[in-house]
Amino acid sequence: MQTRPANFVLSIIIPVYNEADNIHTLYNEISNNIKTITNKELIFINDGSSDHTLEQIQALQQVDPSVHFINFSRNFGHQCALKAGLELCSGDVVISIDGDLQHPPSLLPLLLDKWKDGYDVVITIREELPGGNFFKRFTSHNFYRLLAKISDLRLKPGSADFRLLDRKVVDVLKRFEEIDIFYRGFVAWSGFKQYEISYVPEKRKSGATKYTTAKMIRLALNGLLGFSTLPLRLVTLTGLVISLVSFTYGFYAICIKIFSDSAISGWASIMTGIYFLGGVQLLCIGICGEYIGRIFMQVKKRPHYIIAETSLKQDP
Ligand code: UDP
Ligand code: MG
Image (cartoon, rainbow, N blue to C red):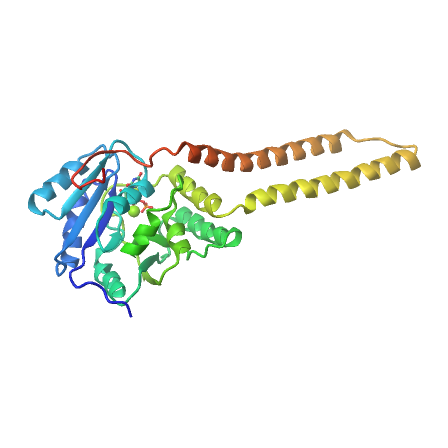
Protein backbone atom coordinates (compact mmCIF):
# COMPACT_ATOMS: atom_id res chain seq x y z
CA MET A 1 0.00 0.00 0.00
CA GLN A 2 1.11 3.52 -0.82
CA THR A 3 2.13 5.68 2.14
CA ARG A 4 1.34 9.35 2.16
CA PRO A 5 3.76 11.98 3.52
CA ALA A 6 3.01 12.78 7.17
CA ASN A 7 3.15 16.55 6.71
CA PHE A 8 1.30 16.73 3.41
CA VAL A 9 -0.16 19.95 2.02
CA LEU A 10 -3.90 20.01 1.32
CA SER A 11 -5.32 22.39 -1.29
CA ILE A 12 -9.03 23.06 -1.43
CA ILE A 13 -10.19 24.80 -4.59
CA ILE A 14 -13.55 26.54 -4.63
CA PRO A 15 -14.98 28.20 -7.77
CA VAL A 16 -17.30 31.02 -6.75
CA TYR A 17 -19.53 33.22 -8.84
CA ASN A 18 -21.68 35.71 -6.94
CA GLU A 19 -21.59 33.69 -3.71
CA ALA A 20 -20.93 36.56 -1.28
CA ASP A 21 -23.56 35.32 1.19
CA ASN A 22 -22.10 31.81 1.27
CA ILE A 23 -18.39 32.51 1.70
CA HIS A 24 -18.29 32.83 5.51
CA THR A 25 -20.51 29.83 6.27
CA LEU A 26 -18.59 27.72 3.79
CA TYR A 27 -15.25 28.80 5.25
CA ASN A 28 -16.40 27.94 8.78
CA GLU A 29 -17.72 24.53 7.78
CA ILE A 30 -14.60 23.64 5.79
CA SER A 31 -12.29 24.84 8.58
CA ASN A 32 -14.19 22.80 11.18
CA ASN A 33 -13.73 19.68 9.11
CA ILE A 34 -10.01 20.04 8.43
CA LYS A 35 -8.91 21.36 11.84
CA THR A 36 -6.31 18.62 12.30
CA ILE A 37 -4.50 19.42 9.06
CA THR A 38 -1.68 21.87 9.59
CA ASN A 39 -0.50 22.55 6.03
CA LYS A 40 -3.35 23.72 3.89
CA GLU A 41 -4.46 26.34 1.41
CA LEU A 42 -8.03 27.35 0.68
CA ILE A 43 -8.15 28.82 -2.79
CA PHE A 44 -11.28 30.68 -3.85
CA ILE A 45 -11.49 31.26 -7.59
CA ASN A 46 -13.64 34.33 -8.05
CA ASP A 47 -15.15 33.82 -11.51
CA GLY A 48 -16.02 37.43 -12.38
CA SER A 49 -18.54 37.97 -9.57
CA SER A 50 -20.41 41.25 -9.64
CA ASP A 51 -21.32 41.15 -5.92
CA HIS A 52 -19.04 41.36 -2.88
CA THR A 53 -17.61 37.85 -3.18
CA LEU A 54 -14.01 39.09 -3.49
CA GLU A 55 -14.32 41.45 -0.50
CA GLN A 56 -15.64 38.57 1.62
CA ILE A 57 -12.65 36.40 0.65
CA GLN A 58 -10.21 39.21 1.36
CA ALA A 59 -11.80 39.71 4.78
CA LEU A 60 -11.11 36.04 5.53
CA GLN A 61 -7.49 36.47 4.45
CA GLN A 62 -7.01 39.01 7.23
CA VAL A 63 -7.75 36.36 9.86
CA ASP A 64 -6.47 33.23 8.12
CA PRO A 65 -3.29 33.30 6.01
CA SER A 66 -4.15 29.92 4.46
CA VAL A 67 -6.97 31.61 2.50
CA HIS A 68 -6.10 32.68 -1.05
CA PHE A 69 -7.93 34.02 -4.04
CA ILE A 70 -7.64 33.96 -7.81
CA ASN A 71 -9.65 36.80 -9.29
CA PHE A 72 -10.69 36.39 -12.94
CA SER A 73 -11.00 39.40 -15.23
CA ARG A 74 -14.57 38.30 -16.10
CA ASN A 75 -16.84 35.26 -15.88
CA PHE A 76 -15.14 32.31 -17.63
CA GLY A 77 -17.28 29.48 -16.24
CA HIS A 78 -17.04 26.85 -13.52
CA GLN A 79 -14.81 24.39 -15.40
CA CYS A 80 -12.28 27.12 -16.28
CA ALA A 81 -12.29 28.19 -12.62
CA LEU A 82 -11.49 24.59 -11.63
CA LYS A 83 -8.66 24.60 -14.18
CA ALA A 84 -7.13 27.74 -12.67
CA GLY A 85 -7.36 26.19 -9.20
CA LEU A 86 -5.67 22.98 -10.34
CA GLU A 87 -2.94 24.90 -12.14
CA LEU A 88 -2.07 27.27 -9.32
CA CYS A 89 -2.50 25.09 -6.25
CA SER A 90 0.55 23.47 -4.70
CA GLY A 91 -0.95 20.72 -2.52
CA ASP A 92 0.06 17.06 -2.43
CA VAL A 93 -3.66 16.39 -2.44
CA VAL A 94 -6.34 18.62 -3.93
CA ILE A 95 -10.08 18.75 -3.25
CA SER A 96 -12.54 20.71 -5.40
CA ILE A 97 -15.82 21.75 -3.84
CA ASP A 98 -18.68 24.10 -4.81
CA GLY A 99 -19.12 27.40 -3.03
CA ASP A 100 -22.84 27.06 -2.26
CA LEU A 101 -22.60 24.30 0.41
CA GLN A 102 -24.39 21.78 -1.79
CA HIS A 103 -21.28 19.62 -1.50
CA PRO A 104 -21.20 18.76 2.22
CA PRO A 105 -17.86 19.78 3.79
CA SER A 106 -18.54 17.11 6.44
CA LEU A 107 -17.33 14.59 3.83
CA LEU A 108 -13.84 16.10 3.69
CA PRO A 109 -12.35 13.83 6.42
CA LEU A 110 -13.73 10.76 4.63
CA LEU A 111 -12.25 11.85 1.29
CA LEU A 112 -8.87 12.32 2.97
CA ASP A 113 -9.10 8.97 4.75
CA LYS A 114 -9.60 7.25 1.42
CA TRP A 115 -6.57 9.09 0.03
CA LYS A 116 -4.54 7.91 3.02
CA ASP A 117 -5.79 4.38 2.30
CA GLY A 118 -4.02 4.64 -1.04
CA TYR A 119 -6.67 5.89 -3.48
CA ASP A 120 -5.48 8.57 -5.92
CA VAL A 121 -8.94 9.78 -6.92
CA VAL A 122 -12.01 9.94 -4.70
CA ILE A 123 -15.09 10.93 -6.67
CA THR A 124 -18.51 11.71 -5.27
CA ILE A 125 -21.88 10.70 -6.66
CA ARG A 126 -24.93 12.86 -6.00
CA GLU A 127 -27.80 10.70 -4.82
CA GLU A 128 -30.93 11.78 -6.60
CA LEU A 129 -33.74 12.31 -4.17
CA PRO A 130 -37.37 12.37 -5.21
CA GLY A 131 -38.64 15.92 -5.52
CA GLY A 132 -36.26 18.75 -6.34
CA ASN A 133 -35.71 19.94 -9.86
CA PHE A 134 -37.32 17.33 -12.11
CA PHE A 135 -35.90 18.84 -15.32
CA LYS A 136 -32.33 18.77 -13.96
CA ARG A 137 -32.69 15.19 -12.70
CA PHE A 138 -34.21 13.97 -15.95
CA THR A 139 -31.68 15.65 -18.26
CA SER A 140 -28.72 14.68 -16.06
CA HIS A 141 -29.77 11.02 -15.90
CA ASN A 142 -30.30 10.75 -19.65
CA PHE A 143 -27.10 12.63 -20.40
CA TYR A 144 -25.00 10.02 -18.55
CA ARG A 145 -26.89 7.19 -20.27
CA LEU A 146 -26.32 8.71 -23.70
CA LEU A 147 -22.66 9.40 -22.92
CA ALA A 148 -22.17 5.75 -21.92
CA LYS A 149 -23.84 4.62 -25.16
CA ILE A 150 -21.85 6.74 -27.59
CA SER A 151 -18.43 6.82 -25.91
CA ASP A 152 -16.10 4.58 -23.93
CA LEU A 153 -16.62 6.71 -20.83
CA ARG A 154 -18.55 5.13 -17.99
CA LEU A 155 -19.61 7.99 -15.76
CA LYS A 156 -22.06 7.21 -12.99
CA PRO A 157 -25.26 9.28 -13.15
CA GLY A 158 -24.91 12.00 -10.53
CA SER A 159 -21.11 12.36 -10.85
CA ALA A 160 -20.19 15.66 -9.26
CA ASP A 161 -17.26 18.07 -9.41
CA PHE A 162 -16.71 17.44 -5.70
CA ARG A 163 -13.64 15.23 -5.69
CA LEU A 164 -10.22 14.54 -4.28
CA LEU A 165 -7.18 14.21 -6.52
CA ASP A 166 -3.66 13.16 -5.67
CA ARG A 167 -0.86 15.42 -6.95
CA LYS A 168 0.09 12.93 -9.67
CA VAL A 169 -3.46 13.04 -11.09
CA VAL A 170 -3.49 16.85 -10.93
CA ASP A 171 -0.21 16.87 -12.88
CA VAL A 172 -1.82 14.65 -15.52
CA LEU A 173 -4.90 16.90 -15.75
CA LYS A 174 -2.67 19.94 -16.17
CA ARG A 175 -1.40 18.41 -19.42
CA PHE A 176 -4.88 18.40 -20.99
CA GLU A 177 -4.92 21.16 -23.60
CA GLU A 178 -8.55 20.83 -24.67
CA ILE A 179 -10.38 24.11 -25.03
CA ASP A 180 -13.70 22.49 -24.04
CA ILE A 181 -13.22 21.25 -20.51
CA PHE A 182 -15.24 18.44 -18.95
CA TYR A 183 -13.35 17.44 -15.81
CA ARG A 184 -15.67 14.60 -14.84
CA GLY A 185 -14.75 12.92 -18.11
CA PHE A 186 -11.04 13.78 -17.92
CA VAL A 187 -10.76 12.30 -14.42
CA ALA A 188 -12.57 9.08 -15.38
CA TRP A 189 -10.50 8.81 -18.57
CA SER A 190 -7.23 9.27 -16.65
CA GLY A 191 -7.66 6.07 -14.65
CA PHE A 192 -5.66 5.61 -11.41
CA LYS A 193 -7.02 4.03 -8.25
CA GLN A 194 -10.49 5.53 -7.87
CA TYR A 195 -12.96 5.35 -5.01
CA GLU A 196 -16.60 6.43 -5.05
CA ILE A 197 -18.61 8.04 -2.28
CA SER A 198 -22.32 8.85 -2.49
CA TYR A 199 -23.76 11.91 -0.86
CA VAL A 200 -27.11 13.58 -0.54
CA PRO A 201 -26.88 17.15 -1.81
CA GLU A 202 -27.91 19.91 0.54
CA LYS A 203 -30.17 22.73 -0.56
CA ARG A 204 -28.24 25.71 -1.90
CA LYS A 205 -27.44 27.86 1.16
CA SER A 206 -28.06 31.20 -0.48
CA GLY A 207 -28.66 32.65 -3.96
CA ALA A 208 -29.79 30.88 -7.12
CA THR A 209 -28.02 28.36 -9.35
CA LYS A 210 -25.33 29.88 -11.56
CA TYR A 211 -25.56 26.95 -13.96
CA THR A 212 -28.09 28.30 -16.42
CA THR A 213 -29.72 25.91 -18.88
CA ALA A 214 -27.42 27.30 -21.60
CA LYS A 215 -24.34 26.55 -19.47
CA MET A 216 -25.65 23.05 -18.72
CA ILE A 217 -26.19 22.32 -22.44
CA ARG A 218 -22.69 23.59 -23.19
CA LEU A 219 -21.15 21.31 -20.57
CA ALA A 220 -23.20 18.34 -21.81
CA LEU A 221 -22.08 18.99 -25.40
CA ASN A 222 -18.45 19.22 -24.24
CA GLY A 223 -18.89 15.79 -22.68
CA LEU A 224 -20.67 14.21 -25.63
CA LEU A 225 -18.68 15.74 -28.50
CA GLY A 226 -15.37 15.77 -26.63
CA PHE A 227 -15.44 12.06 -25.96
CA SER A 228 -17.14 10.62 -29.03
CA THR A 229 -17.03 10.88 -32.81
CA LEU A 230 -20.01 8.55 -33.11
CA PRO A 231 -22.39 11.40 -34.11
CA LEU A 232 -20.16 11.98 -37.17
CA ARG A 233 -20.37 8.31 -38.06
CA LEU A 234 -24.15 8.46 -37.65
CA VAL A 235 -24.22 11.31 -40.16
CA THR A 236 -22.46 9.11 -42.72
CA LEU A 237 -24.77 6.23 -41.90
CA THR A 238 -27.88 8.39 -42.28
CA GLY A 239 -26.60 9.60 -45.65
CA LEU A 240 -25.98 6.03 -46.73
CA VAL A 241 -29.43 4.81 -45.68
CA ILE A 242 -31.19 7.74 -47.38
CA SER A 243 -29.17 7.22 -50.58
CA LEU A 244 -30.16 3.54 -50.62
CA VAL A 245 -33.82 4.38 -50.07
CA SER A 246 -33.81 7.04 -52.84
CA PHE A 247 -31.99 4.66 -55.19
CA THR A 248 -34.64 1.98 -54.61
CA TYR A 249 -37.39 4.55 -55.04
CA GLY A 250 -35.81 5.78 -58.30
CA PHE A 251 -35.64 2.24 -59.56
CA TYR A 252 -39.30 1.77 -58.70
CA ALA A 253 -40.23 5.00 -60.52
CA ILE A 254 -38.39 3.90 -63.65
CA CYS A 255 -40.19 0.54 -63.55
CA ILE A 256 -43.56 2.31 -63.27
CA LYS A 257 -42.62 4.57 -66.19
CA ILE A 258 -41.64 1.62 -68.39
CA PHE A 259 -44.24 -0.94 -67.44
CA SER A 260 -47.30 1.15 -66.72
CA ASP A 261 -48.94 3.95 -68.68
CA SER A 262 -50.33 5.69 -65.62
CA ALA A 263 -47.14 7.30 -64.39
CA ILE A 264 -48.54 10.04 -62.19
CA SER A 265 -45.98 11.45 -59.81
CA GLY A 266 -47.68 12.89 -56.77
CA TRP A 267 -46.97 16.39 -55.56
CA ALA A 268 -47.21 15.31 -51.93
CA SER A 269 -44.54 12.65 -52.18
CA ILE A 270 -42.15 15.06 -53.91
CA MET A 271 -42.66 17.75 -51.29
CA THR A 272 -42.29 15.26 -48.44
CA GLY A 273 -39.08 14.00 -49.99
CA ILE A 274 -37.67 17.51 -50.38
CA TYR A 275 -38.52 18.55 -46.83
CA PHE A 276 -37.28 15.30 -45.35
CA LEU A 277 -33.99 15.39 -47.21
CA GLY A 278 -33.57 19.10 -46.50
CA GLY A 279 -34.09 18.48 -42.79
CA VAL A 280 -31.70 15.56 -42.63
CA GLN A 281 -29.05 17.50 -44.57
CA LEU A 282 -29.29 20.50 -42.26
CA LEU A 283 -29.08 18.27 -39.20
CA CYS A 284 -26.00 16.52 -40.59
CA ILE A 285 -24.33 19.81 -41.52
CA GLY A 286 -25.15 21.03 -38.00
CA ILE A 287 -23.46 18.04 -36.36
CA CYS A 288 -20.38 18.41 -38.59
CA GLY A 289 -20.45 22.16 -37.84
CA GLU A 290 -20.35 21.47 -34.09
CA TYR A 291 -17.10 19.56 -34.50
CA ILE A 292 -15.62 22.08 -36.95
CA GLY A 293 -16.51 24.91 -34.57
CA ARG A 294 -14.63 23.10 -31.84
CA ILE A 295 -11.59 22.60 -34.08
CA PHE A 296 -11.74 26.33 -34.91
CA MET A 297 -11.77 27.32 -31.24
CA GLN A 298 -9.06 24.80 -30.41
CA VAL A 299 -6.56 25.97 -33.08
CA LYS A 300 -6.79 29.53 -31.78
CA LYS A 301 -5.44 28.29 -28.44
CA ARG A 302 -6.86 31.19 -26.48
CA PRO A 303 -6.27 31.07 -22.73
CA HIS A 304 -9.04 29.39 -20.72
CA TYR A 305 -9.12 32.25 -18.25
CA ILE A 306 -7.46 35.56 -17.47
CA ILE A 307 -6.30 36.28 -13.94
CA ALA A 308 -6.72 39.92 -12.98
CA GLU A 309 -5.18 39.47 -9.54
CA THR A 310 -4.18 36.64 -7.22
CA SER A 311 -2.69 36.16 -3.79
CA LEU A 312 -0.88 33.03 -5.00
CA LYS A 313 2.52 32.82 -6.62
CA GLN A 314 2.23 32.36 -10.39
CA ASP A 315 4.80 30.66 -12.60
CA PRO A 316 6.57 33.28 -14.71
N1 UDP B 1 -19.80 28.81 -10.70
C1 UDP B 1 -18.72 29.50 -11.25
N2 UDP B 1 -18.87 30.07 -12.48
C2 UDP B 1 -20.03 29.99 -13.20
C3 UDP B 1 -21.10 29.23 -12.64
C4 UDP B 1 -20.95 28.65 -11.40
O1 UDP B 1 -17.66 29.59 -10.64
O2 UDP B 1 -20.09 30.55 -14.29
C5 UDP B 1 -19.64 28.20 -9.37
C6 UDP B 1 -20.75 28.52 -8.38
O3 UDP B 1 -20.48 29.72 -7.66
C7 UDP B 1 -20.75 27.31 -7.48
C8 UDP B 1 -20.34 26.18 -8.44
O4 UDP B 1 -19.69 26.80 -9.55
O5 UDP B 1 -19.77 27.42 -6.47
C9 UDP B 1 -21.52 25.37 -8.92
O6 UDP B 1 -22.51 26.21 -9.47
P1 UDP B 1 -24.04 26.13 -9.05
O7 UDP B 1 -24.16 25.77 -7.61
O8 UDP B 1 -24.70 27.40 -9.46
O9 UDP B 1 -24.53 24.93 -9.96
P2 UDP B 1 -25.61 23.78 -9.61
O10 UDP B 1 -25.19 23.22 -8.25
O11 UDP B 1 -26.92 24.48 -9.54
O12 UDP B 1 -25.48 22.81 -10.71
MG1 MG C 1 -24.93 24.29 -6.57
